[in-house]
Image (cartoon, rainbow, N blue to C red; front, side, top):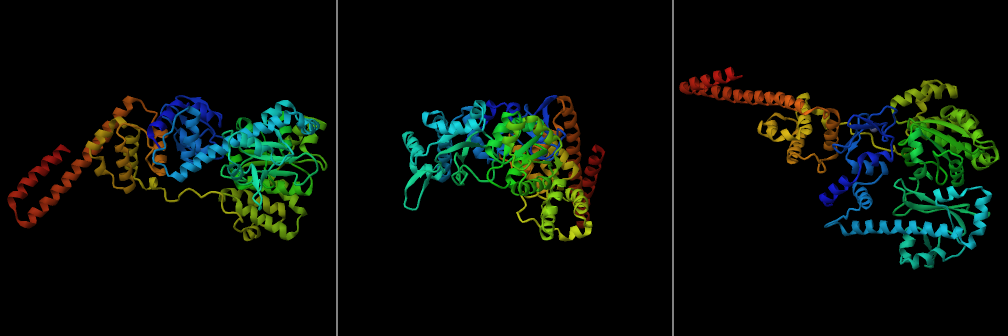
Length: 567
Ligand SMILES: [Zn+2]
């Protein structure tokens, strides 16, 4: 991708504004700080330095420029992030010699996203049309107000087999494309028709606010009650949460989320002022969803039905959140009530009280599994403790689980086994090359990173000869290649991390301090060079002595003494 376009995108974006869409930043001198959205914490370890164009977390070392941030928080790769931000900033991208298949995929994605956006509008128009009376009545009975209809973009798909198909054709889209992105279905006979018929349509947004899927709820008693978009090039099942796009700001602000099950439950919660409510899509919460949600807040309150299925789902959700180290509390609704009926029937204060008195997640799990068979209890304990992310966290849970189940910790340790699911993310590389640097190497490289104006002098002063560590040498090579520029786009992930880490830690100094630091570095480099010359001279001296070359010996000896005086 053209570096100029990338520079232009960066220039047009306001780093603080963009990050502020996801986390609550507050100013601290030239920097802005917040609790990190990429790991659990309450301290403001996350720093944004808009002047120098990077962010850095002192807790988890997440770091990068504005595009890296956008990519990471939205789960995009670098290229996808550039494409989105280019559109936002109105920068034309020249992909140059891009892999044609990749280019096609990228173009297809754009088409699919447009199709979803236009389909959502189409469904909304359906709802408002004369034929939409039935669906409007249904939503009226569920007491969804107009503001929520608009906020969540709720619509209706007509009972026709070729309603959306006709609409998409009128907009110039090919049927095959609509099949690929899951809006239409093709049966074995090759017939193509609408996937969603006579359903209330709930658009599902990604974190960038684009519609990537739909959930369709039957209005009458027809089965299945819910149909969701299947896996498509723009939608991966189990990654998104319903309403997170709408709830994100409140979740970040309050550092807590409310997790429930149905679409209309989420809408009702928002309607009654629970703006941090999000919904599980489909039945069971997934690891990706937990990761996504716990990236935004440290506490999740679960509001689930009180029937057997609801309890089971709540245990599963709670154990996944706890395993990740999030705080979690559980509200189970009285049997026969759902969120919707409770809010409309008894008002928001009842739910608010229930949430404030909610049971701690682990206590809830331990109590609920009392009703399981011994085999299931043992399985549960093994699965839960096996899934807990760190040893420290496990040590924290172990005594509570043991006493809750009436077992000894020793017995519990014995039944602990590996989790069924693969560990959700690889642990950071154990062999961090930065750790192999000597203190001096780190200091020199840090100076080189923070003071680009001295890089040339560093090169002349012989820094390359001082660095012994291979990683340090390679890093210096790349750094000196930047000249005075501070854009480490071509660096490896490790090199970038080191670069931003150093900038975040060391760059608050003034110009005068830089000059003083340079004097210190120069003295060190000079001394090092001197020592090298002495070493070489001693070698030559020894050689001359061995060869009995007395004239050389006396000359070298004199030169060596001069050098020693200089030092
Ligand atoms: Zn962090």
